[in-house]
Length: 202
Ligand code: HEM
Image (cartoon, rainbow, N blue to C red; front, side):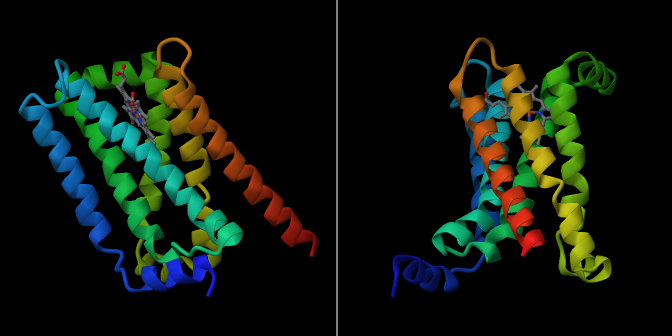
């Protein structure tokens, strides 16, 4: 058996649900660290950043599931929903820390969204993720039909691009990390467009 086959054999025995517990546990652990001084001198900002950074990683991981299967044969499909839904909750936590702990006033939240372009872009990405999270269940998949569901879930690409642009926009000075995230997302999107073209021509 090849390496992908061995990995897939192992993964078949691992259920997807523990991922929710691991992600929720990590988020609670970060919150606890923030409360107890483990996140440095500015715990609210640090917590906000931890959740945002992990949310962006989750978006990228979710986008990698299909190419990983196509190029290496490693099949993470059964984890995709858990990855997507957990990522949504991380970004919801990121937004909640911003609103409840950081800004602390709905009026000022609105001002921040309107005034700071990086917040506007982050908000747009978050809003795109809401219909995806709401329809990430078997009932919605059945009601919508596979084609419409897949069409809607293509929103993950613009959401991920906006998430990376949000990051790029908020960092001060030149930093590689947001550029690398944006680069990976654009390469994944370009690969998807190529497959679709190839499929359309076949
Ligand atoms: C898909 C949606 C989003 C993603 C992927 C995302 C991702 C990120 C990332 C990666 C960071 C920087 C983390 C670091 O420095 O390590 C960040 C920071 C931040 N994000 Fe988001 N974010 C999203 C949505 C939002 C929304 C909806 C808001 C508020 C309305 C928001 C407000 C902020 C703020 C205030 C910071 C910290 C800025 C600072 O420290 O100066 N983000 N976000």
